[in-house]
Image 1 (cartoon, helix red, strand yellow):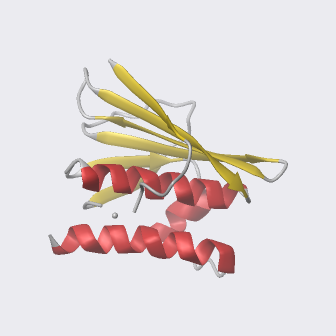
Image 2 (cartoon, one colour):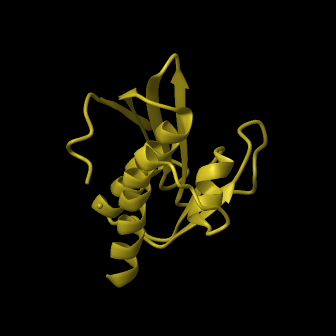
Length: 137
C-alpha cells in the first residue's frame, strides 16, 4: 500500500537517524533491505520539486512530494534528502538505508566533497543537524 501526500510548504519540516547513504541509479534494482528510502529533486527553468519514498516493509510505503519554489537541481536534491531525514526522525524510523541519484549531495554527506555554494549551505547545515541529532539520541 502506498500513502501519497503533497505538501505545499516546508514549514512543517524541521529534524534523523543513523543512516547509510548510497548512490544508486534509478534504472537498476539493488538488493534492498528494509527500511529504505529514496530521495530525488528536480529543477526546470528555475522551478524546483522534491520527492522522497520510504518503504518500511514489503507492505508499507510512503511517498511524499512538494513544490520547492525556485532554485537549482542540487538545491532540490538537498531539500529532498532533508525531507526524508526529517520524516524518518519524526516517525522514529531507525537504521534506514538511503538511496539517491545526486552524486554531489551523496559525496557531500559522505565527506568526499566540499560544497561552498552559499544558497546550499543552509540546507546542508539542516541535513547535518538532523544527522547529528539522531546520533546523540
